[in-house]
Length: 285
Ligand code: MF3
Ligand code: CO
Ligand code: CO
Image (cartoon, helix red, strand yellow):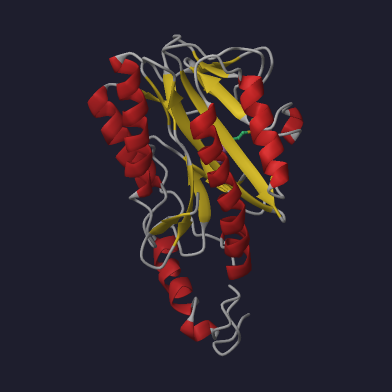
């Protein structure tokens, strides 16, 4: 048992009674109400947060490069090569490469592909929408983020989906604060998506991240009956809603990776890695 005057386990250097003691007492109250309470392994210390922050600097720089590079005529393999070479150049490692057998260094998901699209010789054409999902490892720390790109003249409906999905991500992010339930995120996103008639993908969600690619807890982007985990400062996780123009159901192709909408409708996704702070959130990516 940690004593009141011992150094806090979070690594702040402060005494436990001046640091996480009040959180821990507060959390007992939530536990009594049936909420899931974060364990030590869910909370990052200062050094880990700093490591994730530095990793995220690389991820953000990669998106800056992609902003100029992604256009009609480019292949997803060329996007992959740009990501791979520049990650290495900046001292990082692309986390997707060889992750559970994934063959490339990023995910490229076009039109009805929901996520986990594998870069190939497919050429981007006018009217396509594409999600590019990057995860960088630097000194063992992971940062995970994805953005949408619109190629040339995109239909009004597709453009709306891309913008609404970004909005859905931000509505989720705004729920992030200490002592709220992690399920407030899905609640808020569902209210918004329902108002637009979209389907929210249920089979995949956000996740803890930082010292591994995918950590607990799982983050639902839709409303559900669970009470969810209570958020506390130092937790790091992603919010990454996948929103379909049509129904929420998805299928996985024979390559065992590519997730597509079952009804063939367009799908969009945006993702950030977030840190829970004393007052709310910090977007790390
Ligand atoms: N970056 C994805 C996520 O947001 C995971 C990709 S797994 C991979 O969780 F193997 F396909 F790269
Ligand atoms: Co993720
Ligand atoms: Co990702």
